[in-house]
Image (cartoon, rainbow, N blue to C red; front, side):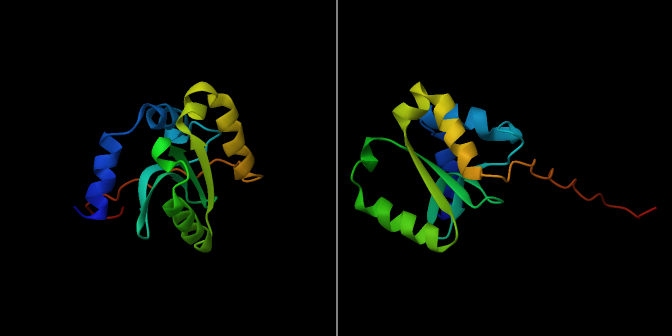
Length: 127
């Protein structure tokens, strides 16, 4: 399975915490900011990313407790210019507002709405 296929599969099998979090982040719902979910970046697939602010948000379950691979992954992402925020699934499920406030804080002063996606180009002559 290549990385794009794996990202698609992860979108279909999100945890309860990831689903709840996505409900708040999708469709510019968090102060007009655009996030993507299960996005390949280099050799990794991140849970949520805001490319304009270079911000990655990870929802971590028990398998991440003391995981040395996470430190290597975070270091690589930081070298690419990203800030990585990690939240435990319990935090997302039980303290959603505080998690969203922390994300807004990390976005900093860049709280202007993300530009809308361009409309698809039609086939035909330009009038």
